[in-house]
Image (tube, rainbow, N blue to C red; front, side, top):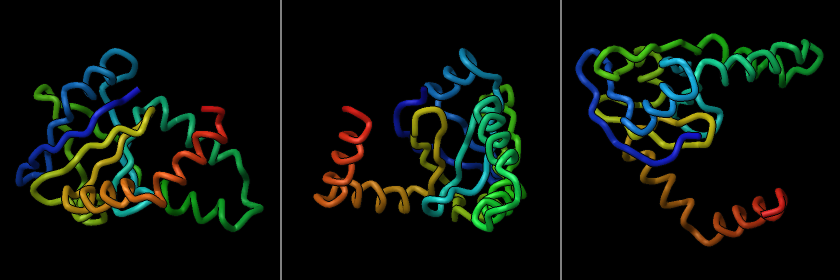
Length: 150
């Protein structure tokens, strides 16, 4: 599982270093590739280790075409998805369209979300993290924890 929150600079070509702790998880448990796509929760990117993306993609693909919402989900996630391999320096090249979607230009914040990660424009992540610390959000988190037996 991924843990932690890290901010790294991005170079002019769109390359950014994946935080060392996250690279270690990728090396130990997965291949050194992330599938990046648009997030459904905020203007950020989702980064899935390739095997985790394959599980998600197979489940979504198997859902059929009967429900309009599932078709919209496929249209949103799949065209944007790009496999990004780590280079020797531990960096990934974030495609321009995904950088534009998430408003990432000179720096990015990597946020751990269990089996995947999120990549945010740092100021946007700061706003979201401040909202999460609010009383209403804390109550919602506690309710979610209770639902799963924690």
